[in-house]
Image (cartoon, rainbow, N blue to C red; front, side, top):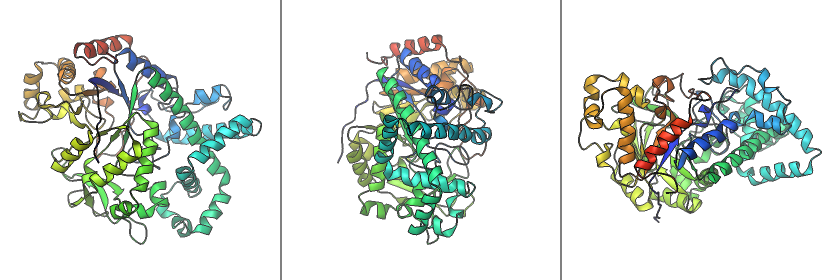
Length: 507
């Protein structure tokens, strides 16, 4: 069953939480997040888009998380824990959070953050023993979220116990979740399970306070969820029936995309493929629970790689790249109907970039899901290129570039004159700075209902501020905004731009 979604003419800013300024190595839900919400409001924009908030694993990608439901403990603000009396004044500052305020050092973060959070946990449990109200809130949180929290916290406690190796390398009895073994580890690791429960409690407490503030400023948060889950995750360990696994619980096929204009080898993501037959037989219960959890976090949900719902690419797990694979038919409308039932009137954005599929177009139209266009993809010289602003329709979300792309300034400086010839003609601009400014105007002036640009493009930063380069290892997900880099002048300029093109919030 289809439904109607409505997006007013508006604009937003893409800013990962991890990229916010912080003295503790990575962005958090602390003061800088509230200040950024103020910036979005002052700029007259309607949306703050974030990247997935899940707990990152090896490789540090927010699209490869230890859980589809749990939040990233790194985002818990340490100053707020200090204000709550859970950390001693100055304690968090004693640790090494990295050498640069411009980039996240995930190695040092991992070494220090959980020591600090464990100190807060010990103080929290002591406080709960004498504060009935606090203890009651904590117990209520655990009860309300037990459907995913119990398995996640046990998974993380076991991961610690086994030296953080993948669950596929654990002892067979717990890897296979033999019931008596699960009970044994739940008892043996009870204190560590409680620690991970505490981290999730604090994550959601701080996030919910931040979201209330953001919404009170008239801003809505666009969240982002990957279609797939990480192979090393609580979800695959606890729900192997949801995925296509062999008798030894190894993926039969893994996800990715075939070679295209951007990569000769394609992209082999390595995520296990869903067992869509099992999911359909269950009425897509796991997906419904997942989407309900996301609907509680965000005002709008962007589904990454939406194409995979309709047709998905599978790769043999031992293949070195994505050159040899095949497309399989996905659940399509059966899943979108289940999602709509689960989330009610919560709005969805479909990341439909890639191979054009008529069935995808039909599903988007029937459900009112806007698709996406990216201005950086527009300038190949093809006058019918759907990413060119004069080819836009209203039901779109237009990006200058996404987290997977170059910054606009980087794009306009690192490509050849021949490649940029049409861009210069179209934008009527010559220097990279002029082309960036003209890109904003081209997108904001377009008929598309929603326009979103990255903070890096507002600041006209080069590719050293790029968030991610797909199919590469190392150096990704690290860029951070420096305190004071965004100014009131930037907010005024963005408000002026939104005003010229009828995108001012609440007008």
